[in-house]
Image 1 (tube, rainbow, N blue to C red):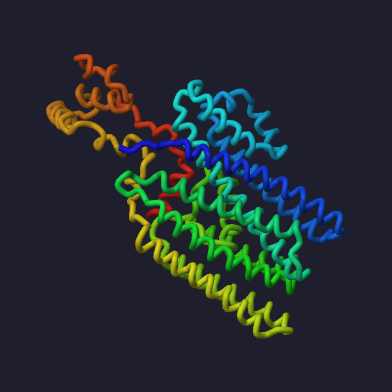
Image 2: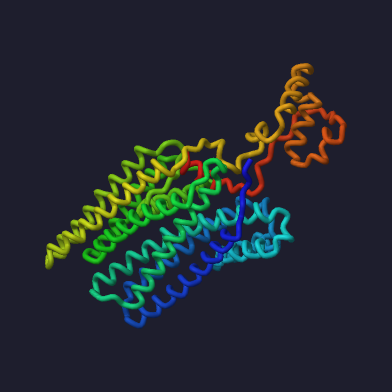
Length: 433
């Protein structure tokens, strides 16, 4: 059975993500100071609201995941702080940086961790999910804000261009890292090539950029109505997220927060949240998005009647970009997307993979002894076989030592494989099923 891997490339990508996060903070400060000096208090207020709201949302998810995994703290950094101190870090909006520092320490000082590879993989999954949430709660709205300011002013200001490029790069990195995390759950025989990530990135780029451009055009012409459009769309999308009956979080309050966040992500791009085939739901979503984008661009063109030819060309380019993104998405699912059953994804419990990882003759002996005794739980060979499989250490097993373990009572349940992040695995099941 294929195991999780954490290569030097993964570590470099995490470090690059941390660097882009710090760079984005610098650009945020630069934008805030510039808007204040220009006395553009409306843009300043919206930017501060986006920064604060996105940070609080990310810290809330980070804290909830720490509270769910309270009994599974593996690293020295996690164990050196109490629950109250960890909560204080998240209140101070430092929880995400704490996670990055913890992962860097695990990689650089792996000898001090019991299972450094699986621990690093586990931690990187949560970071990739947090980056995805930040992508659509902060970076995407910031791109809309900066593009709307450029369209209203009719000039390319340094602060707006730099912030738009920085937010766009953060979005691209977040989406790519999320797909890389999903790919890590595939078995060796169904591993996707690098070209699949390129196609995945391209269709997301076209769909997201088309959506953001349409929203920016509408916001530049009718700035007061963009908030009404967002709230009305978000309520509808949250209703469909609730109807999907998601079960990613471990608490009712956390699940409600997750569904509200799914509605926010759906406002910009599609996101698989339910198991099974989502063909009709995806078609309904993209049909709704295509109509909405056309209406937003049409309203912008109706307001800006000075140069009708250029406006028509702009509207057509935005709509065609979205349609092209849909074609690339269809190409991805037809040529690159593997059809994988839930049990084929790695990181499943040992109980479901036991029979595939042990010699067939042991299973045969266990079945013979069980039939002879008439009671599976009292079979010595069966108990020995289970003990050996669950422990993962042949040298300590009774079969290896030539002894027979005789112990009454039911066998111990199979534990979950260490390092398997059940949240990301659930998302992988939704994506590949």
